[in-house]
Structure formats: structure tokens, C-alpha cells
Amino acid sequence: MNKKAQVTIFIILAIIIVAAVAGFFIFRDKISVSNIPVSMQPIYNSFLSCLEEDTLVGANILMSQGGYIEMPEFEPGSAYMPFSSQLNFLGNPIPYWYYVSGNNIEKEQIPSKKNMEEELEGFIEQRISECSFDAYYDSGYVIYSEDPKASIEIQNSEIEINLKMDLTIEKGDEIALVNNHDVVVNSKLGKLYDSAIKVYDEEQSQLFLEEYSIDTLRLYAPVDGVELSCSPKVWNAEEVFDDLYEAIEINTMALKSKGEAKDYFVVDLPVNEDVRFLTSQNWPHNFEVNPSEGALMIANPVGNQAGLGVLGFCYVSYHYVYDIKYPVLVQVYDGEEIFQFPMAVIIKGNNPRESLEGEAVDYTDTEFCNYKNTLVEVNMYDSNLIPVQAEISYECFGNTCLIGETSSNGVLESEFPQCINGYIVAKADGFEETKYLYSVIESEGVYIEMDRIYERNVDLKLDWNSYNGEAIISFVSEDLTKTIVYPDTKTVELSEGDYDINVYIYQDSSLELEESTYEECIEMPKSGIGGIVGLTQEKCFEITLPSQIVSSALAGGGKEVYYITDYQLQNSNTIEINAESLLEPTSLDQLQENYMLFETKGLDIFFT
Image (spheres, rainbow, N blue to C red):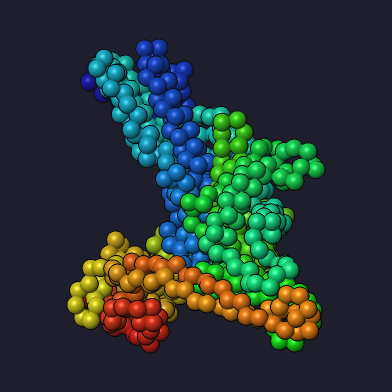
């Protein structure tokens, strides 16, 4: 009987221990700061301060970099369009919200609030483990933590952070575990972002920056006019551009969002915060004017030709057409907090560019998105029929609804709002974003293939010999453009598709275009009675074109249209490109001939 009683006692103790352990794991989420011993409270407070600091640092990066922490893929500009996809502001890159790519495609890269929350979550998860507890380690504390998982909600004037992470603090017999950490940080990120979106939408619809630019153009540069003169009017285009951009810079910085309505520089914007506009002559820009002769703008007189002497006077009429492209940095600020983003200002033929249709897009619970009433099964896979986990959204007439994510088997079964000719949009790491035209009318299944992205080395050869000099290599397809500056960059990310591959090889040149002077003579009426009866005299003017040195000249390259298959990318490591050389130019004519020959040159392309 005694042995049975002892066994019973051990069984009861075992049950109690198991129940205690189970209870610990079941109710450990309930553990809070109040359960931490007083001696350990400073350690936990230090951890919360670290979490707040990381959040503020991340929020400041978002505000200073146009809503990004991780930069979108960089895209260089060109001689025609000077904008890259980022503006270098005091050494820091800021992604453009609107720009025109080097191959003349209008592009937007506006982050949604959801994107910002996700980037801030990743930033905190990466940095929180770096919190220093050195002072407490020296006092005998043992502190360790598990993998963090952050959840962020950006409000108007604050950021709410929920961090799930097992944080254990031990010293002697005392132990404390906290795995749910909630912090609210004062930040106007959400409020300033919302106002930045409103300023951006106002510019896209009204083009007020372009309108101010046209006013400045007509005040500070020759556009249209008539002057009494019998000699040509000559302007140096470079001097005109310098004076014009200086005026644009000053006038842009004079713009403001508050003040009296009659103030010319007050911009009527639907925001309460202060807004500042900046541009600089040191930022990439491009000015062009037609007609022009080299660096000169020449307007010839009318009235000194034969048969017109009876007029008794001469006049110069001119009409110049300008294309102007330059960046503006918009800063929306409240107190010391500033949210900034750049966008391109473009004048074409003395007129503003056309407005973009629609507004900045975000995942929103619009009225359209509230009526998800049609079940659709979306199946995502790659070219090898391997399932793809992707984020799925649906676009229809300016509305974008987040639907959900496919499972590990590449399938998402969810309700969609009904729409004719909408787009299913799929995004997945390692794949090109895919848009699939699809009308949601009745419940059915849809199968969508995504193109996988491969990063491959690029090996450039010139006349079949390894080349390590300067070159620009572009892969241009219908959906994307990838350009690398060789040899600084020797890798490129590509997916299956039809590409125009262009290689421009440049080498140092000492080609000097000498100063040239030519004489232009005109007939003008003689003074006095002779002029009345039509007698004329010749008057000549010397026009000088300044000298210049071409320091880098086209020395090789070519073009090739090539369809790159997924199989080639999947089964290779390197893209080998061979280009032909061109003669080293020793004159302007030869330099121009090289550019004409370039158009006829092909490329040899191999995947190894």
C-alpha cells in the first residue's frame, strides 16, 4: 500500500509539473513589464528606448529618401534625357517619383504607405538585435533574444510598433521573459507623406511647375520677337541657357505654399504644411533650342533683300523653340520633420508636357474594392511549371485592390471585384512583375506564367579580344531597360524576352575642333536718298564658333536584336558580347562617320 501511495504521489507531481510547463507556454504572451522584477526594469526600459530610436531612424530615412529605405533598381539617364532614376542630393540618392528614362519612357516610382510600413518593419528587425546591453553584462546579467517579427502601422502623427520577440533577462535565480513589445513613437511621417502625395497629384494634374518655367523662359530667353535692325541678331545658346537656368533656380526657390493670393509665387496647394521647391544648376539637366547653328542662335534681317529697299527700314523676326528638362526637389515640412521627393519638370516645344492620367496609386479600400464577390482561382508558375509564391492584386480603372498571396503550391483562391478588362498584377521576389489582362465576370480559374530574373556576368570583347575599357551596354525590351556602365558593372539582371542590345565603346580622344570664323554678308539699303530708290550696299559680319576638345570618342560597338530564352539564362553564367572597333577619329567628319557606321554594326552574342 505504501508503494502504491508513493507511485500515486509521483504521478500527481508529474501532472503538476507538466501543467505548469504547459501553462507557462500558453500564458507567456501575457507576460508584460509589470511582471519584470524591479531590478530588471532599467534593462527592459533600455530595450524599449532602443526600439524607439531604431523606429525614428528608419522613419527619418523614409522621409529623406522619398519613402524608401531600400532603393529601387538604379536606371541611368542619357544625353537626351538627363534624369537617372535617382536624384543625388548632397551625396544622398533620392528616387524620383516621376521622371523620363533615358529611352524616353515616362515612369513613376511612388511608394505606398504599405510599402513604407514593410520597409520599416524589415529595418527594425535587422537593427533591433544590435541593441547594446554591455553595461548590464558587466553587472552579471544574462540577456538573449530570439528572431524578431515587427508589425508597423503608420498613423498621421505617430507610428505604432508591435515587435514579437522572446527577450529573456536572467541574473542568479531571477528570470524574466517578454515576447510582445508595444511602442508608440511620435512622428509626422504619415501626415507628411499624405501631403506629399497631394502636392504630387496637384503637379501632375495642373503642371504648375511647368507653367512657372514657361513664364521664366519668356522673360529671360529670346522666344518670339521682332526688332528694327538691318544686321543679324546673334545669341550664344550656352549663355542663354546659363542665364535661363539661373533664373529658373531663383524663381523655383521663391515658390511657396502660403501667403497672399495675389503673390505671384504662392502656389495654391491642398495641404496645411509648408512646402519648399528646390533645383540647382549642378543637378542633371538638358536644354535644347531650335533653330540654331552650332552654339549660335542667328536671326537674319528682313528688308535688306533686293526689291525691299523701298521700305526704308529692316527688321529681324525670330521664333525659337525650346525643350527644357530639369529636376525639382519638393520638401513638405512641419517643424523639423521634412518629407522630400524629386520629380522631373519637362517643357517640350515651349509647352508643358502632357499631364499623366490618374493619381498616385496605393492599395486602398475604395468602394470598388469593397465588392469582392466573385471567386477566382489564380495559379502562378514559372516557365518550368514550378509553382511561384506571389502577391496578387487587381487593377481596374485606377483602383488597385490587394487580393492576397498564393500558397506554396502557387495557388490563391479568393474573391475578386467584378470588372471588364482589368489586370491581375503579380509580384514575387526573383521574378519580373507580371500584368495579366483578365475580366472578372464569373467564378473560374486563371493560369499565369511569371518570368524568372537571372543575374548573369557580362564579358565584353572588342574584335574578339578581351576588352576592359569604358563602354555602355543596354538591354532594351518592351517592358524594361537594363543598362550597365562597363567595366564598373559586369553583371546584369535579365529575364526571358526580346531585347535590343546596344553596345557603345568609348576611348580617350585628343580630337580638337579648332575655332572657326565665317563671314556672313547681307545687303542693306544705302543711307539717304539712295536707300529710298532701292540702292543697297553690302555689309558683312564675322561669326566665330569657339574651339572645343572631344575627350572621349566613339571607338566601337553595334546593335543586335536578340531573343533571350529562359533556357539560355538558366544554363549559363556569362553573356559574352563581341563588338567591332571603329577607326580613331581625327576630324569632326570622321567622328560623324563613326556614328553612321555604328548603325550598321552588329554584335556576336553567346551564353556560356
